[in-house]
Length: 207
Image (cartoon, rainbow, N blue to C red; front, side, top):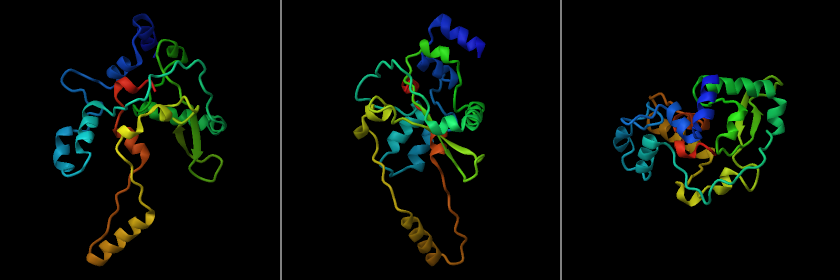
């Protein structure tokens, strides 16, 4: 990390450019996640209204349209009290994410060399026990109104449709009725998986 810090300070390497290096961008492949192959999407997502959008995301990363330029953040917000209270577990979770390649962890001094908009952390315990594992929350809606969520051009994003859990129950009942002798399996996913696999475009990592 000391070498990276010195390199950035001497060369004025921007946050986006540093991300290109960290994500192993090359002239041959600009895919931020090398495990995703966009060429397969035209077949796997045939008929899906946002197939082309998914192919672009896998090729270049998730691009966001902003309603205005990133504001000059004169004061960095503090983390939410929930994150401060769970300080040790937050630090442990960040270390795990760094080891997995999800988070880059750098010295705070480097923020003086990067045009970065800082958002606070929050933490939600996953259980009732005091020492339970936590779900780390990156709060993009704070501080309001100068936050990424407020500056995002939401009409440019694909619409999100939420289904009540009853729809899942009806689907299970339907399959059980149609195929009474077949074992019914359920595939589930989470937000963490989406963030882990669909990386942001390097030009937007300053948010």
